Length: 422
Image (cartoon, rainbow, N blue to C red):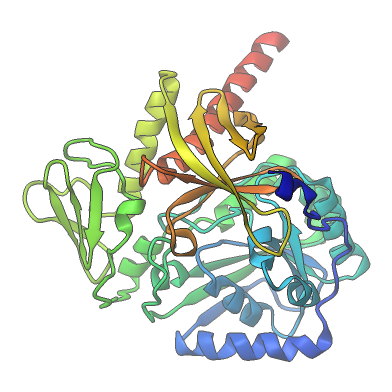
């Protein structure tokens, strides 16, 4: 801990650079062969005559997103908000291609200043992934309500890039590429003149509606056949609760199968991404339905105020872009009061708390850097990568619980305000 304290923190105040002209052809060279290989088709709606500056909001499902995005905005350059782990070992390069560092799920006023400089001073495109993480089940994650305030403040057009096929090609629970075709739709959803007349709710509604997607529904509707032999391997990371016996964390998967180690029930994943039980009823043929079933189970625990997670963990620190620092063993709890991380690193006590209303979601990783699953929690000065040691495959439930706790307390706050007004 003493060693980590001495490390220089990432310079979050440094002004964003415009993408260097000599690097623009490099980004095209890295992007276009990949999207051509995947037979990308881009549909443009309301984009005729639109030039930077504007805000580009994009769904976020895989690393391929950046390549599709480069093709979608060609020949214009952009600045991109990127999580700090993306800068490891390549900070100078990423700054030159226009990346702006962000620690996930923190309220960073400095970032707003950087974004404003990009669109209102440099007159460029700012790219934001409002989901702030890869989609876990190929569907839209929760979006922050603060987007409308940002749109009003920046006062430039809003464009949404909604991509299909990227998740199916390389889902976060099994990153091997499948090679399927891709599709994208880039739409100007709000003009500069409309910003003045729309309410915050209307702006958020437009954004939310434009970012709705369901990768497995798109796959079936477009007959996108995937013959990759390990297409279901890793799926148990997301589908952690058996809908047959209701046991958690006893699911497993391999090749095109997913099964429960507790009751033995097994499902086969088809080449169109559908599940079918080997015997008995098929509770959920559509993978996102299974995922939402799990969300419902978590929501029930929160409504009954019995949700609780606790485990021994190993903690790494990421103070800057030079790499991780192993802090040591600690205890992580997540319950109705939010996150609490407590440990003693090198003889120095450590404590970090995150209240439910401070995070509308949280970032998790599966088999991170070839290791185990982890959760990351950030302050404005550091990011902590937290690896549960006993409750394996628990990070998906923690992610769902973070979102549901936020909604639960937001609802309670609204009720309190209504009663106060009455």
